[in-house]
Length: 257
Image (cartoon, rainbow, N blue to C red; front, side, top):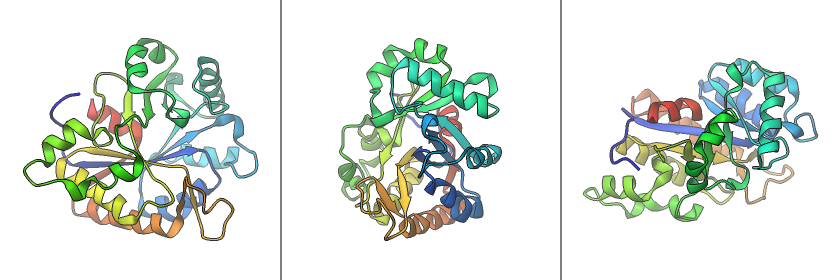
């Protein structure tokens, strides 16, 4: 991992897994409204099923230049056949240049070492990057780190020990910070502000963003809609101050290289 960040300011990525129907509500009411970029990682075999995006909604997201559509396995798997079918399906529906696409590893099944060891093979399949969650801290731990950093040690600590704020620059890998139902807004804003301070990149991994009372609202991997809206407003303020950029995963990955 390289010692210095390539980013000129803090960089925040909002990454949404699976292709849930809630993603489109989020797009219409928050992301589009505030011109916030995001990456939607699509389990293409589930598109059109209850609770998932429709083909029309997927096309609308893809047509917005601020949004990125990435793969997530045709049937939410990490094996070659499932990844290839996912790429072929998305390429058949959307205008994917040269069939090259980003990929979010289902259940973070691909680890950093595997991605590094198989880089040529993954590139040959058409993958631009692989987003995973291979970091040394459980989610609750890595979203609390800001409270433990001192001014003198922050930069060294972040670069060496917090991969969700950096990259495996040698290869295709991007690490992410998983957002859970119990994650507080202050945890999210704190990690984004730390990225701004360190001129680093943080990729936030969301699964579902739900309204109170909706089905699966209390699930471990569902996040509260109103808390997300509060977080988005914080990001917009930081962007207006010039402290951060809000990019897609692909944009951040290419910048980080």
